[in-house]
Image (cartoon, helix red, strand yellow):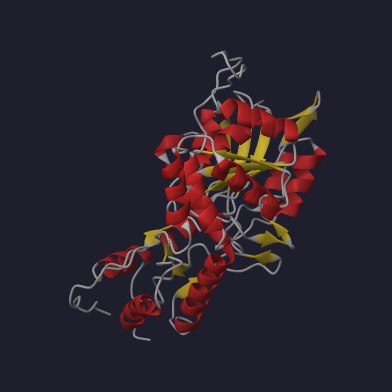
Length: 394
């Protein structure tokens, strides 16, 4: 079917923009009024407490962004240069970059076709069949490198099937680090993401469910790890008065003014999640009869947060492929986004090992995320759906 000519120019509909409708202004103004705008203050402490309480995890350490949180989590969990870290191949590149920043090598794991998340069966098989346990550590039989951690990523607001991964890794003493940067609020078998491994990370980037403009958080029950993370993120200063340091540290701390925004956003978390659910439900319902479109599956054990409503486009049944739909929507002022290039195909990680990979490659080719801002109006959602239905002839 030939695409119709774009109509009159309309306001753009963005993929995922912040929804600032709470006390953000009041809390940030309080920082300005008191001059508490840098990397300490009551809002940093409060924000850490809110995230710790919500996830049910004992300790939380705020960071400047999610990538910094991942880097720090890897370090405090004991990942060393030369180690290998199993992680998802279908995710944003920051996860693998953090592994590299820690001096380790990523081993990418394919997605599960049923959930689009890291395939737990592949992780278990790799740990149990492709590795040797000796001297208290697990080693990749092929490379001889130690397995330093398993780093599953809960993508698109849906949790990974964690129990098989946690059980297999735990049997060999391999720490599990959750990348929950896209999934604050999601649950797995009644447990919040962030509480399913030994340590976890969140992101508060501008496109996340809760935003600080930029920010991250580490959560862990291991108090020693939390204290080490707090120490290293503040340049490893060892004396409260003198400028003395006992390690090579990092300037990774979140500012009070960013945390103020985060606190205001977090107060509305339930409403933000409800808005994401409404958007996903509307898309699924209004596009149910559109041939060639299928949405991110929902596992029976998952309570996702629908961070980005994402479809697979079947070129044979739909009017065009995913990239054609991307361009078609862009011509009508509607921003959509492809899924990430699988990291085992990225030029930045050439030569990295990958366990399978065909599922992630298919999802990359066919996947497209639709506008999913928590503040998306019914009118704008209707514009998106009308454009898709008009193209498909539904």
